[in-house]
Image (cartoon, rainbow, N blue to C red):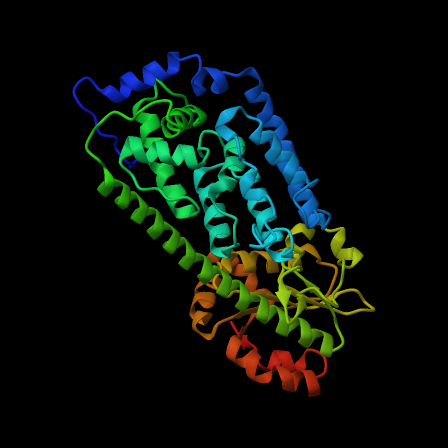
Length: 428
C-alpha cells in the first residue's frame, strides 16, 4: 500500500528504535499491547457501541453525555492504560461551543448512529472508509477523528487509534504534517501507518495498536525519532490522494441521492394517482420509509399484501415491486409499476414475471415499466431477449416520465379505472 515512507540512515535506526521499544517494560508494547485485559475490552466495547446504536435508533439515547451509554463506552476506552488517556474529552458536551453536536441535534445524532452501525456491520476496508466519508460530509460540529478510537475497537487491523500524542509521534517519525480534527488528515495518516506497519511487520502486528503504541511513545517524549530527511512531499501526496478519493465518493453519493430522489418522486406520483383512482396502493417494502412530500412514501398505503399474494412462493419478489394498485374488494392487483430510473431493467422485468406467473388463478394484470423517455430503447432491447419471450404474452407496456408528468393531474381528476393510464402507455 502506498504511504509515507519513513527515512532511514545506515543500519536502519528506525528498526533499532522499534526493537528497543518492544523490550522496554515501561513502553506501551509491554505495558498495554500485551496486557491481558486489552483483548477482553474489545468484546465489551463492541457490545457497548451496539447499545449506543440501539438507543439512538429507539430515541432513548437522551441529550446529555453524562450517564449515557456513550459515556460508558468511551470511559472504558479511556481506561485502556495511558495510550487512551483523555479519549473521552472529545465526546464531553461543551455547552458554550455546542459541541459535539450529537446531543441536542436529533438529525446529527441519527447520523452518528448510522455511522457506528455501518462500521459495526462492515467487513472490508472500503466499507469502513465509505462510512467515514459519509459522516464527514455531514459536517457535524465537533465530531471528528476522535471517533476513530471507537473504530479501532471494531476493526483493529484496519483503523489505527488517533490522539494528539500519536499524531505528534507520526509527524516526528515520518516527516508528515498531520493536523488534528479532520477526517481526511486521519485517513492520510492511516495510509502511512499501514505502510509503516507493513514494512516492519516482524516488529509489530496485524493489530495496528502496536504501531500506534510506538508512535504514542515518541509523541509523548519517551523516545526521540531518529534523525532523517523529512518526507513532507510524500505526506502531501497521500493527503491529496485521500481528498481526491473523498471527492469522487461524494460525486457518486450525490448522483445516487439524486437518482433515489427521482425514483421516489415517480413512485409518489404513482401512489397518489392510484389512490385518486380509488385503488389501494402498495409501495415496495424496501422503499416504504423513503421521505416524500413531507412524509413517508408509504403513508396512506397498504401495510400488507392481500392474502393470495402473501401465500405465493413469489411473495418476496412481489413485495419489492415499486408500486401496486390493488382492487380493495377483490384483493387482486389491477396494475403493477416498476420504475427504472437508473437501475437495471432486467430486475424489474423479472419481478413482473414473478407477479404474473406466480398468481395464475387471477386474471392478467396490467404491467408497466416506467422510465425516462431516453430509456425506452433500453427497455425494448431487454424485452427482445429470448429469456423474456413470455413478456410479450403478458402485454407489458412502457410509460415515459414525460407522459406521466404531463397527464397525471388530469387522470387523477377525470380518470376512471385503468383506461386513462393505459392511454398514455406504449406497447412494447
